[in-house]
Image (cartoon, rainbow, N blue to C red; front, top):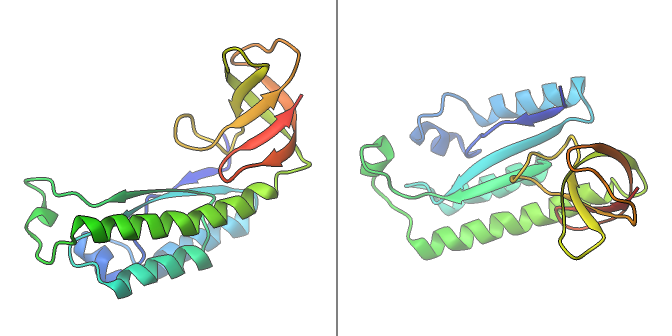
Length: 187
């Protein structure tokens, strides 16, 4: 078991959550996040958000930016809403144009980039168990992940070593640098 929670909240605006037919509120989401943080302070919390949902106003989008700033997520994925036939949202009015969706997506991910960068810096000078997933061909660098990283979704740890590491094994890696989403370390 790892202290990793994936909670796809989709949005923070109560109005948009209702349009999405999500049976939760901004206040419910905050209560869950606070409960996790109170009982498991080192937990990593990931979420998925949708921007450009039909009817999303500038106010709703600003609410979302404010929400992730005040309730930062360790990991965050975002998607631009796209119509899918035979879904309730397909028939909703007030569709958001593609340019606005793209602008909102980029703005959201820019805020998350800053959040992630600040969180990743906290791992520098710590030693973490890292499972090795692959070697970068032609380089003495391996790629692995900590218990805080889901394969193919989250960041990686670049492990510099002259040793031959075994794929699938877990090694203690001293983190000596961070990138926006990834860590750099050595055995």
